[in-house]
Image 1 (tube, each protein chain N blue to C red):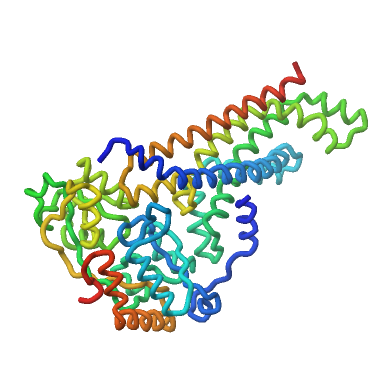
Image 2 (cartoon, one colour; image 1 turned 90 degrees about the vertical axis):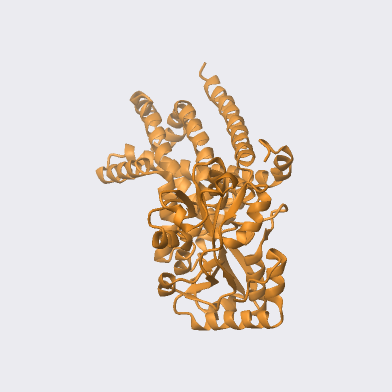
Amino acid sequence: MNFIDFDLMMKSAPFLLKGAGYTVELSLGGMIFGLSLGFVIALMRLSSRRVLQMVARTYVSFIRGTPLLVQLFVIYYGLAQFGLRLDPIPSALIGLSLNVAGYTGEILRAAIASIDKGQWEASRALGLSWSQTMRLVILPQAMRVALPPLGNSFISLVKDTSLAATIQVPELFRQAQLITARTFQIFTMYLTAAILYWLISTALNWAQLRMERRFSRQYL
Amino acid sequence: MKWIAAVGLLLALPAFADNYAAIKSRGALNIGLEGTYPPFGYQDESGTLVGYDVDIARAVAERMGLKAQFFPAKFEGILAALETGRFDVVVNQITISEARAKAYDFSEPYTYSGLQIIVRKDRLKDIKGPDDLAGKKVGVLLGTNHEQWLKDHTPKADIRTYEDDATRNQDLLVGRIDAVLNDRLIVGSVLKVYGGNLQPAGEPLSHEREAIAVKKGNPDLVAAINQALASLSADGSLKRISEKWFAQDVTHP
């Protein structure tokens, strides 16, 4: 057997790229839903209601204290036993979103909390409502603080989508597994998949840096 | 984008359909298989699902007047997925065993095969049969009857379980394990893919019968499948499919 089978690399490219499409979609979907839920979690954590704080804290603790792989298995295999039979892609999307929410919730909470209390007081004194203050004054500043860790979360998420292969989502890693099953060219296929993940992460890293620069520009 | 459609799907959860009437009204037979198990079910160069089990399942569905829909699943959870209704039948070289017959219903067998020890070429001299497996590392797929057979017959073997054939065969090739136990019908494709570096050791071991597995308590579905298999056997279709993949007829004892 060849060390690296370039011919196979080329031939399998269309399938791997199709898989990479799912990888990107799962990542974007997971980030959008995860970030939205994460924002809710952050607000709950910052709320003055003890019950909301408790619920949010327990949620974050559970998500961060359990492996994503186990979370995906509970959703895909576990819930099916109780009649909630989710298909692979929705299962992965739910699992990834819930997971991302646990992490981004903490990032957003810390970012919002880092904005000086005087900003709140000044905004309220000017007659801005709570939501206007949040939207116009606090969030723009908090985003600047939150962007670097959010970007890191996103890149982790891209790599974590590979776990969806275990619940039959035809994403990049699963495509590599499927071709490996036929050709038995393990090194070639998994190396090619690794390179594609690297390209996706690098592209995102670049986008993140550009965004960070843009958000900080107006404050320089 | 597709994930939006996926969320839509979520809201319209598929209703439970675990009896023949529901399958007929759906017009499609949902078939579970690994999809990573050549030559039984795997993706060919064009990304199409092909294989002996795929052809059999397709032919059976067609005789039943149904469309064949395939759902990949990991072997270790494939029978359990019948329970949850993820699919209606499993067509994946499921060997009929006493333990499984307690939990699942089976069609009449459509494959008559046996177990085969496979080793690296240079180990042929010291592994000649099941007795030689004592104390050796033997690779099998998690949840297979191959794993069970080892536990029953050579309890001294050091059993290593794997998720798919490719990684297990690779470990055999590089010497992390000493032998592999699998269906004898994979030998042809193993010989070809590894250029003769992996070889069958000794004769096939047991006689096994493989059948289509169904969730327990669906006599109508089992009867319809058996009728389809009998008709495919009578007109030579089963034989033709078998000869296409194995150059021999393995559909009869």
